[in-house]
Structures are given as C-alpha cells and as structure tokens.
Length: 161
Ligand SMILES: [Fe+2]
Ligand SMILES: [Fe+2]
Image (cartoon, rainbow, N blue to C red):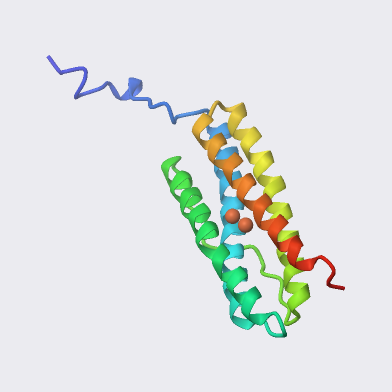
C-alpha cells in the first residue's frame, strides 16, 4: 500500500501557493513590473554616480552610489518571489531618463522614487487581497525605503534653482 505521505495522489498534490491561475498571474505581473523599475533604479544610480559633474560632484556621486545596494536588494527579493510563484523574472529595466545636468538627475530620482513608493503601496494592497501577508509586509517596507530615498533627494534640491 503506497505511503500517503511520500506518494501523494497527483490530484491531491496541491500546495498553499497554488492559487487560482488568474490571481497568481496578477501578482506575478505586478512583481515583474516592480522588478523592471528596480533594475532601472540600479542602472540610474550607477550611471548618475559615475557621470555627475559640477561643484557638488563628490557629495552627489556618493549619495547616488549609496542607494545601489538597497535597490539591488529589492530586485533580488522580487526576482526570487516571481520564481517561487512559478513565473519568470524579467530581465529588462524600465527606461532610464538621461541627463548630464546634476539638478535634473536629482529631479529624475525624485520622480522615479515617488512612482516606486506609490506603486509599492498599490502592490502591497494587492498582496493583502490574496492573504499574502509576508509579501505585503515586504512591499510595505519597500514603500518605506523608496519614500526615504525620495525625501533625502528632495533635501538636496532645496534652495537649488
Ligand atoms: Fe527600490
Ligand atoms: Fe529607491
């Protein structure tokens, strides 16, 4: 007689991650969209840190560079989650806005971080809707990280016209 624990009936072999297919696709698509924006952030901060010029180059270069590990951490979490849910993590970044002007770089960063934090608020609600509590908590933390990135960038812009 087959052992029910080691030889489960194929029809009964479900796991907690086997949601309705449509629900699962909705979450995977949202996480992949977020992943493409995290890749964008990694590339944007890398390029801006390397190419920023002007009287504030040293400070701004360090400021941009120090954001990279956070964004990479977000990207790695999202890619792992997409794969865990049976999806394929995207490899294409969202387009990186190009400029050689230091102030415009900061404005581009504020815009990107603002969009990211608003999107994470949306995605965390979606995760909550499907009772994905761990995922929801991570996405809320990411919204918090992006808010901090945005606020710190805005401080650089104050009084700079
Ligand atoms: Fe991020
Ligand atoms: Fe960020």
